[in-house]
Length: 289
Image (tube, rainbow, N blue to C red):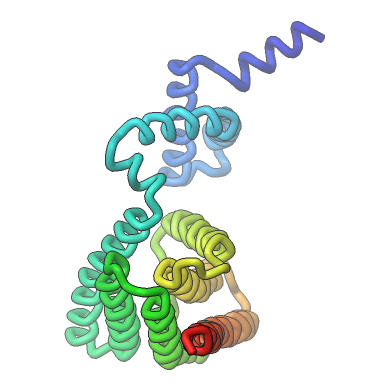
């Protein structure tokens, strides 16, 4: 029994050199298998076994890797500030999102003009509204303003999200009616799916974390992240159905259900933000009187 435990320990916890060797060979071989279309070949089966082992030892090693990375980042000045300073972290996230949206909207708008695409024009408006919201939050996130003003910012973001629903509804209808089919080349769709699910889960976890609205500005940031994550889920589903679905009626039905769910979710988020912030503002006014 002790011998078996020792063997399993060596298999699951190899030294760094062996880990890197199997990581490169395992994942490298399975990528080569797909690129060279050797899925049903003996070499393909071997690559599956190697990649499975590489995946297992990677998962087992992840907690230790996470701990070491965290300790390293915690020892660096700015990464330490990013980890522990909520204000700084939200500012960086907003700033990066703002820059990305600017680049993306210029690209989308240019392409929509060149190809006379209504879909690309709608996505340009969608990202333009996101830029406007993020810019407004960037202006207020570092300002020393009263709690009431922060709540008013939160309410305005709710109103802007409600306006954003109109654009989202247009994009959703374009997807549902089949005027727009989204696809990703090769195995990129798996990376997109993983990233989309990660963003969606993180958006929900952050929403729960800031649900008490101790800082309305931070809550606004999380609400925007949830809205964009919901829209990304609809786009991902459309891409998955386009890649793997053979039944057109099933695709229309699923896109309709998810599209309506996204629209209703965004409307609900907007109404909740407007109603809850209005209630708090009234309470603040009553307390002052």
